[in-house]
Length: 174
Image 1 (cartoon, rainbow, N blue to C red):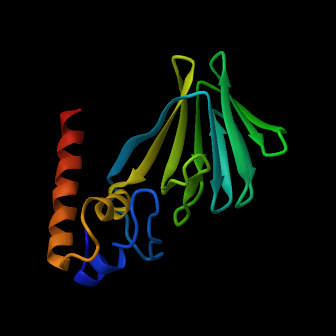
Image 2 (cartoon, rainbow, N blue to C red):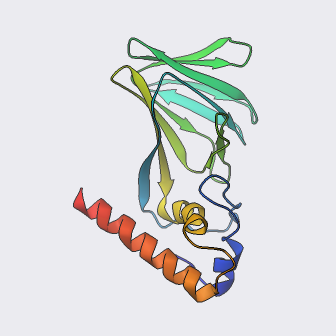
């Protein structure tokens, strides 16, 4: 996970809701984690820190950075509107949102920030939002929320290992 103790201190400023920026040269582990971040809502608002693409089947819509989007659902259809209430995209039951490797997606309801990609699903007539993210990016966001960044570097490292082990064991159960 962390390549040196300097990596530990670099990535401890933040929480799952306010994640630190990742250096561009960070290598991916290749292990992807899926985590539901919003469940059972009829409407969700978000803003992307970079250009983004919504995709469903062979349809797609690309928007510029800092665009604010409203997602809603009715009768199994996802509707994506800009903040002027212009319909920009629709999808049946599921849609992927890709907002770039080194960017974050911010939910406007509570300011939570997420890396990776987002999947919007309709379940029981309501929206579930699932974050698809590399395990290292996920850990950079959650470890600071589990242990104080002011603790000794070895404690931070141990917490990262424990969190990674927990995630991998949960994935193996499925």
